Length: 449
Image (tube, rainbow, N blue to C red):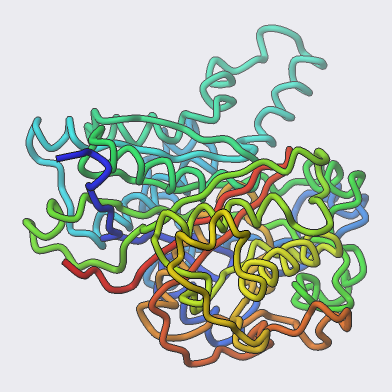
């Protein structure tokens, strides 16, 4: 059998977001229209006051644990591990444990461990630890540099810790592609299974780098929202005319991917199938997308071509849309070009015809309105939201979308403010990152044999 005939399904989910710890808490609050964005001025570090943006999506710390949707590190890692790992690695440990529990998967034999791998990355990692180490070295010299500095600095460490904890000896791989990291990790992991490198992969992204230093960098790059400091919940507003930058968030997402027959043989519940995965480069600018969204259009085309479906078969698109003026407009135009103009003649024959859609029939939303932009974790978290949207037949809302951009291209259904019921058989989730890197995953709800 050719290795590429191996099909990949999703059997477990784990989430940490500004809306809460755990899939249940985050998803219910997202659908209810809640916001996880708060002011940075209540944080202990007064340096937040010096940065032009004063809003962020913090994960709620507390003693209530996952039952209360709160981040309680001791629920997931020992005190010693928490000190050694840093926050983003601890988040990663939590979402992987959540996903494995959800999948009811335990690699309890050497054979299973050798066929199970990890593909998990971060965009920035432990930036605050690096910053503090640099200050300490500058002020006190060599003896004040922690022996843990390098392990905390390396972005593949979370994947390594996971492999060690569970004994996974399959591919242990880490992706770092800025804000496309989480989606690239899931897509790459699905290919490891397709090509026979593993039967099970834990995949996702984690990020915990909110600090005055990181916010200052993004503010200097004119990327973050500054107009809603007095109303944090309104600051992230994808597709809205008043959008003026993204809101940084923290969190993590992980999925368990399995070869279809492997999942069936053990009686696993199946959320859906990864039927397409596209990657592309903008080859345009280090931070700004091409105005017509050429790069993300290429990755969407690639994903649905692999899936063997037509653009008109896509019932929902979870957009990358971060609430920036240029980014939202470019992605919106790319989606319109895909869904309304079809595909170019060279590709059109591969779709076996093309059904004409009205713009209002195109369902797009950006869940970043509620949680902000989780950078390297965003693609994993949003893939999970897309899976849950298919499971429940519901389009998650675009928070704060009070006045849709009046430009003539903004005529799709952006699911403003309130969730909408909708049967979803096929869905896309998009991610883009600095450097001009894009990815799209195509998911199918029903796994037909």
